[in-house]
Figure 1 (cartoon, rainbow, N blue to C red):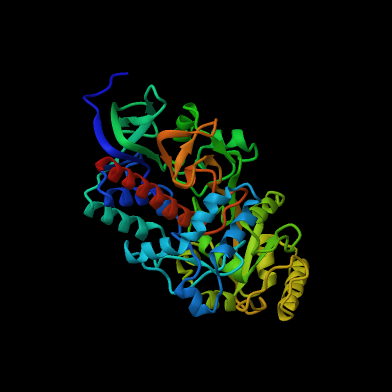
Figure 2: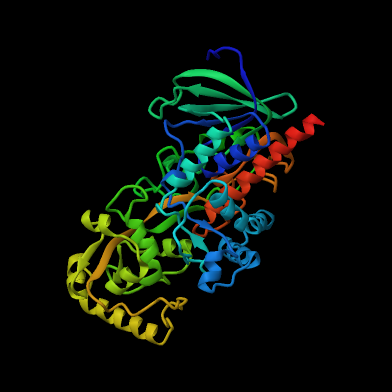
Length: 473
């Protein structure tokens, strides 16, 4: 292997250009660090840019206007309960304590605009989730890109990290990269070294699209299980960290989401119907039995685990009242026939092969429970906006699980420093975002990933900026 030219030297190297990596870069550069961002693909954003961009935070004006009482402690309890104690309470506490600040930063500093509403997603005890106006991570990534341009931070595309450079004292001092990277020829291109005076930050995201690696960890996640991730969501950088002794946690916890559809690739537009309408206003029906099988507002792990038992498929159903009350624009998914419209439940049942009488009975029982504000079957938390599903037309979509988020990854301390297998700090190596494995434990709650990325990314960036100040003393 021939190494090209003399090494480039900067203060901070950030690997990855999603929410976490760009947050690191903004804060470090704001503290006068010379920062470079490396992205192996030809466009920035990673999985962040194809997400819905939603963030979770407590104590907001939107909550106050909606009469929602929420606290950092309540959010902490929800995340720990969802994580089944497998998450690190120190990191979770940090994310929750600074969630409101991160949300405000995204609006006031970056200029991200959000929908004027607060959403409730499964596993949260109260509504605390906020979605950008474009229902996408695009606006946040573009605002971050603009901020970095104003700070003169370069983002190098098509540059993959082949390995970490470690000195004789086990300190990570840089990276060996491949210029002109291509996923079809991952080892071809020009190799060169980039050195970091202060630190290398791994913000490369998860590995949900890495079928061989994920199946090694969870055998049921074969290539038959689709993913919401970009094909770039692979494990090579995580494994590079592991090769120098970095500690990991919860690697086998790979989250699948239950509101996507097999009728489109990736996350898709149908997830808007599945997540924002079916989960909060509708029902999930087992095609074989015509019955509900889970609390639709349960956390995504519980629902996804039940999906794996339903070999004949699942259909999500809502009525006209639900679609109108939810207020989301379904025109594109209706036009593409991802979401279908039916005049009555029997026609819907015929189309999907659902037992008609069983479906009608299921809806009667569910609707009667809603009138009494209870769910005797699955103890769903009945919210004020939920009404009986009885007003035609009825909307339906085939539903499936797709790999979405890898809850496991590198173990970090509250400053984002990566720990080794002997629980000591690996000097010079930091991490933030989905590549870490401390925050979510057994299950990630909706919108908490963006919160984590912004909170921990900013902390890592501020830590590195502080080290610049120390060196000037």
